[in-house]
Length: 107
Image (cartoon, rainbow, N blue to C red; front, side, top):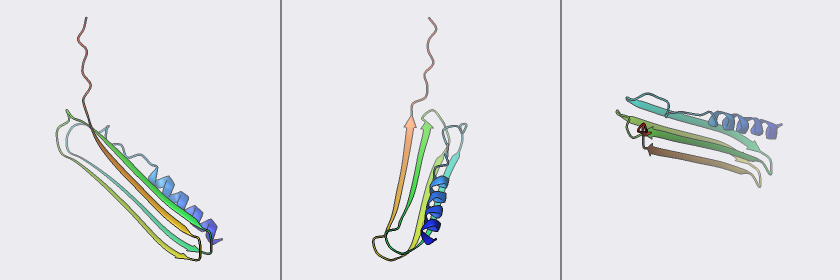
């Protein structure tokens, strides 16, 4: 039963983390993107596994004006008792400045 609860908590965290946070569709001006993920796991027994993955990609056109702020917070708390248990947390953040699209000259 506890293993099932751990799997449900882990899947819930993964599902939340996979929701996209899109900053490349916001018009020019000041922007802020905040992504926060939290996982609390209680593991009792042997051979259990829980994992939290969080990824954030921010794209900004260089021609945009204004300030941009990006925040990513990822918290994992695990109470683990037993042997051969694993708790893993992977966090990734990528910030990209991209050139704006150039208009083509009519022929």
